[in-house]
Image (cartoon, rainbow, N blue to C red; front, side, top):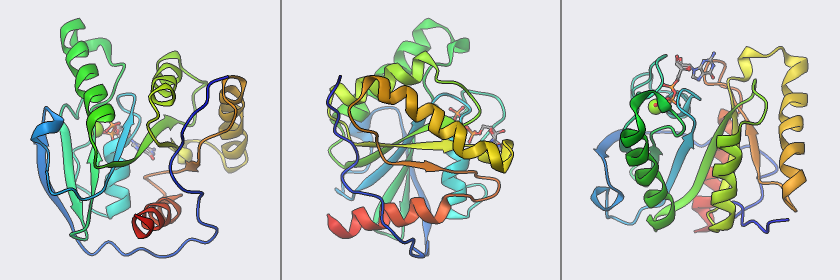
Length: 215
Ligand code: GTP
Ligand code: MG
């Protein structure tokens, strides 16, 4: 059994309506040292290519084109910072596990991601996105294990829930979590979302708001 350190807070009982009054693109950098140095807290989105990281940032901020999205995997290739309400950042990261670009490029992205995740002091919570339609994939489980063994606070965000019928959404998430339970003592906070229907948007924002208020 691994002992994991999950995201710092319990999920809030009630959702509150955090209002996004501003969402501004700040920078797109290949190395975490080149990212903003103002010390504001940041919330980053990671997961396999095409899982919906950039789309979720757009859904959360209700800006359709803030983060660039594509139906072709491998769209996001740098660390992208978006300043929210002049107070905190949403961070869009490249996807992992996308082999199409060749070994060297994959290695580069892998290092970019792991350096960011392990060394970025401002990183307050990492949201690991998982496509709710798929059975647990090795590459995701390995990444979660890497986070756990390095004490990185994270929460799981299931994406694309609109692609399942309502009755299948919860069982799919529970099945996934059951797999995690085989290895871990406790489960991380998790969210079920859809960027298309905005399912889970308020809950995720309330979670971030709660953490921000307790920093
Ligand atoms: P990379 O930057 O390539 O790693 O991908 P990404 O994880 O940022 O994915 P992106 O947001 O670009 O979305 C990939 C594709 O999935 C796009 O065609 C999106 O329209 C689609 N997509 C993302 N989220 C959802 C969702 O919640 N529901 C549905 N139906 N499609 C989604
Ligand atoms: Mg992207």
